[in-house]
Image (tube, rainbow, N blue to C red; front, side, top):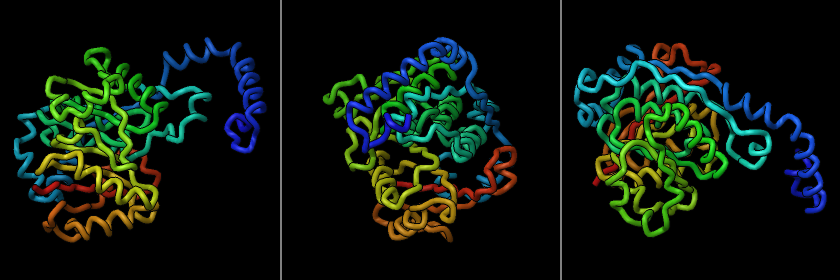
Length: 315
């Protein structure tokens, strides 16, 4: 495995290592794949009164007003239960995306299950979903009109589609927007006929966003800031992908746990979003707040502190 991924190894050495790897795996491949398909890691995320109380007591007024319908109007499910399947070893070494279930994904999913009015009847985009798309699954179960789940890595996208299809039990068709041609993706109305959930490639590091992915009402993301360059890239993609008045809901480990978070917060302050209060700017308004222990109870945060970012794109 080290030879296959070693940049200093010659093409001949890498090819020989790959061939040997295939021979060694062949005898166990069928058993491993069958085991992989039938098991997976079980995950359960439940709504909680503590999360809802924390949210209603701390969220900025503009998001409470924009999702003012009471919870009983959008009952949603009490629990998201699924089995997540990881890719095989060969695929893992081809992907820079960690095949990991971070606590932030579960915290965001819990918020959406506890406050389904945030996404019910709305168009939702998840960025940086990785291998699982747990927040988007929660948004789908909470009654969003359509959800598009994105990542930049093809290996992650393949496994993401598999997990969505299996977790949703075949009740919802999972579209693959990677099969669309450029003209379709450049059509701003291309998603109007779509219902349910879809996967799509989105590289928000280069600043280019197809027109079809620019009109969402809600953007969700978890654990997407962990390098300094990501601060500006995430702020830019929020503005590009949300329609005016759209809301971004992001959960990320605090600045003393992740690189880039301090830069992200400084950038948001320049744009008008602050931790202390809610103020406006030409582009964004909003705030961020630390998740309480009660709201996170039952989710293994490995002693990390997590912040929720609530941002709105202004006209």
